[in-house]
Image 1: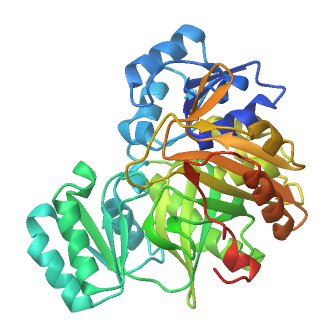
Image 2: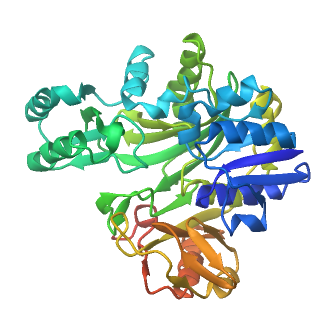
Length: 426
C-alpha cells in the first residue's frame, strides 16, 4: 500500500522508520521530509500546511493512507479535506483537533465531562487586567498557557508573582503570535508528569505506551521550556493500575464525550498527565505523537505499526492488539547552541556513523541537511540519539556513549535525561 507521512522532524523520521519496516507498505512518501528521512521514504516538497497540494498529491499518486506527524495540519483541517477526497487519514477532524488547538476548549471540555484537571480560567487580550487580578488572588506557583499552538513553548510555570505577571504581558504583547491572544491560567498541580498514548478509531481505544520527557532546556529541569530535550519509555511511574485509571477516568470519557458532541475522535491521542496524590489529572491533550516521545516508542514496538494505523483509519481497532519488546528506550536530544532562542545553522556534524554503530542505538534526525557527505545542523533541535537496553540504566549508558562519539562543537545536550526515574540527583 502507498503511505504518505506528513512532516519532516525527528518524530516523522521515527514514523517513517517504523512504517518502512512493514511488508504491507509498498511505497512510502514523506512531505516535506528531510535528507535523513530520504533513506526510508520518497520526499515530496510540499509544506505541512499546504492542504491543497497535499490533497492533490494524494489523488494523483493514489495514496492509500495518510499519517500526519505534527498538529498544525490537523488543526487546519487536513483530515476533513482528506475525508472529502476519499483518502484515508489517521488523524482527527479540525473539530476534534481543538483538544490541542485550543487549551481553553480542552479545559471547558474536561469540565463538561468530569475529566480530572487543574482548576482554571481563561482570559482574552482585552482582559489583561482581569488576568493579572486573578493571578494576584490565586497566588503562586501558577501556570500561564497560550491558548493556541506555540510549538511547545507557550507554557510558563511561574514560581514568583513577577514571573507570572511578566508571562501575561509577554503573551499579550505577541510573544506567541495569535496563539497568545487568549490565555489559560490554571492551578499548579504537584506530582510527577507522565505521557500516555492511545490509538483511537472514533470508538475503540487501544493503549499505546507511556513515556516521560524533559521539556526544560537546562539540567535539573530548569530554564525555559523547549519542544523536548529527551525522553524515555516506558514511564516507570505508570503502573498497570495507573494506566487503567487513566483509561477509565480520562481517555475513554474523552472519546465518548467527543463522539457525543459530534466530533468523533480518530487518531493518536496523547494525554499529558500529572500524577497527584488524588490520582492522575489531565494537564493537556495533544492530537499526535509527542516529539521526542515518538522516538522512544517506535524502537520498542514489536507489532507491525502500519496495520495498527490502518485499523485506526478504518474503524477496526477492536480487532487489534499492541505488543511491545521487553526493553527500555531513551533518547537524548542534541540541540544547536542558543536553542530555544536564536541559534546558528549550517554547522558540521561528524561522527554519526560511529555513534550509530553503538549496540542498540538509532539516531533520528530532527533538523539536519546534507551537502554531499557532510551532515549539517539546520534547526534548533537537531538529533535524537536513541538507545535501547534491558534496563533504563543500560539504555541511558548506550545513549550517552553514542552522544559522546558525535563531534559537533556548536551543539549541546542535557546529561541528566531520566534522572528522576533513575534515582540520581540532577
